[in-house]
Image (cartoon, rainbow, N blue to C red; front, side, top):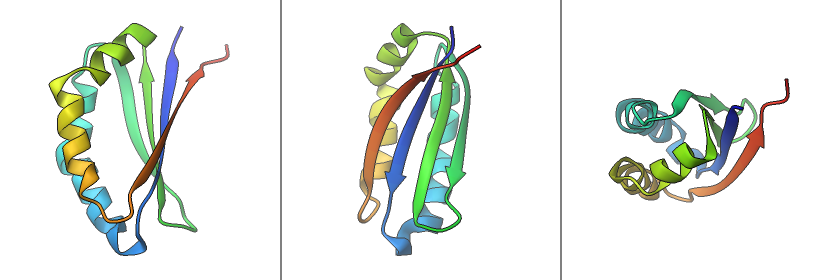
Length: 96
């Protein structure tokens, strides 16, 4: 069963372009290379300086392994530097 991992991210309005750049150049490639990561996408809110990191995983064990990986630590380092960044992680099961 697929598990969808959504990270709801809010940033300072002055950081939106920087957030997109960091995700595209540093974070996305690290995440998609992780064992069990089926896909990843970054969604940008049209009306606010908010994003959703949308990733699909083949198991919760794969998510746990990723969260304990060097790749995850690297992504956290890249995103912590964004002014006003706040993130909330939620897991969802894919309903078939």
